[in-house]
Length: 156
Image (cartoon, rainbow, N blue to C red; front, top):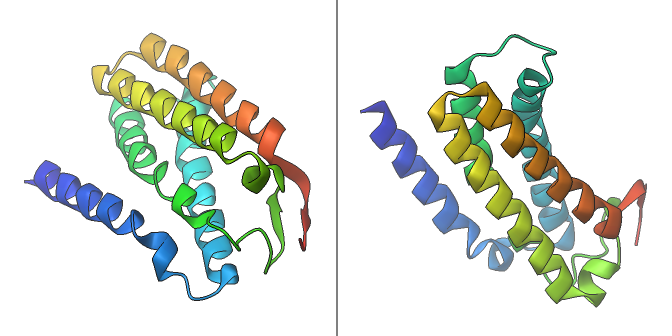
């Protein structure tokens, strides 16, 4: 029953993310939304990465739960990078996001694919499988950050 509720919540979350760009009344709203989503992604992925690195004890159930959450969350922030959201509030988003949208979309899709692999690996309960998948997610995150995220907040 819990699994059914989780799946239903995930579907509702993804469905609500699709028209999210149209729901933002101000650029600041979109910026806060995507920053919040990224914070959640980082927090839940960080728990898995810490297990993979041996910084905290491995717990297969916790890893699987967090991977499932990240797999849902990773689809949310990208709807909030619409036209006009490059300014309006302090952000670390580089202008390249809007100058090179195809490249940004490709980076987002790569991250989503790698997170999907992590979710599959976490369901096996194998720490070795999770370690390999964590590396793929980390590389996808870093590549996107290198190209599209500034080290400092700016008011574009």
